[in-house]
Amino acid sequence: MSHDHPAPGPSPGCACGHQHGPRHIYIYSPSSAVRDKAAFRRGVKRLQALGHEVEVDRDALAVHTRFAGDDATRIAAIARAAASGADVALISRGGYGLTRILPGVDFQAMARAIEGGMHFVGISDFTALQCAVLAQSGAITWAGPALCPDFGVAGEPDDIMQACFDDLLTGHGEGTGWRLPYPRSRVARESTPDYDFELHDAPLWGGNLAVLASLVGTPWLPQVEGGVLFLEDVNEHPYRIERLLTQLLYAGVLARQKAVLLGQFTGIRLAAHDKGFGMDSVVQWLRSQIAVPVLTGLPYGHVETKVLLPVGAKVDLAVQGRDAMLVWGHLD
Image (tube, rainbow, N blue to C red):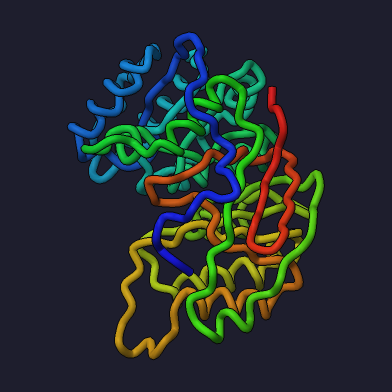
């Protein structure tokens, strides 16, 4: 699989330039401590420059060992985000820390906030909270950017990411499309199926592979049947990615899905003794293990160009040749 940013064809499903009033965005830190304070400040200023009201949680920059405050502090931050009345609750960054506090989170309060119009948005470690919300309440959250790595970059934030975030704020985002990467090796090309299919009303779910696999056997993993599962990861060697996939395979998670979408797996460092074993090998192996389509190149992960995906929403998925389209329609 290519680690370059994917060409977002046929269309990323995000249109720039919507005119809308200011939105209330609440920034909080439920995982690792913010180490890059400059990126945090840049992100806040950029959102404010777009006309939004940005409210920063009182403990957003707290530090307790590697975490953004101790467990009770971060649980309270999630509660304040849910009670803030904001249009969007956006995490400052991922890292680690959410899995250890899930028993203390008030998921019904989060579900009520979502029902009232709030969008919880995040990536990476946020997968734990997203999965738990879906498992405990069925409410929809959004896999997307975080403040520091996406809005707080030293250069200009990615246009597609910003357009998709804007679509979320305006309610215009109804789907995304992308072009499946062309396999690099002859073996991979020969083993890549010619997909041509449509799926309808399948629940979309997923996120970071390592975090999601860690929830197997817990009350926080959604028991999704007939779903579309999307996965991404960063700084994991292909053999570790395959090992995490075997956890989902042997737990029966993969067999219950209608399709598996592989996003961007970045930060991979291969070794000489891999002898050609890489992400292409993992994808080939996965396709040999399950009888559902395995699509690559989804523009989502620890990359600048990322779309927003509604975790828990019913979606339609259509593939024709190398063109894939994921549609969820209008979500109130």
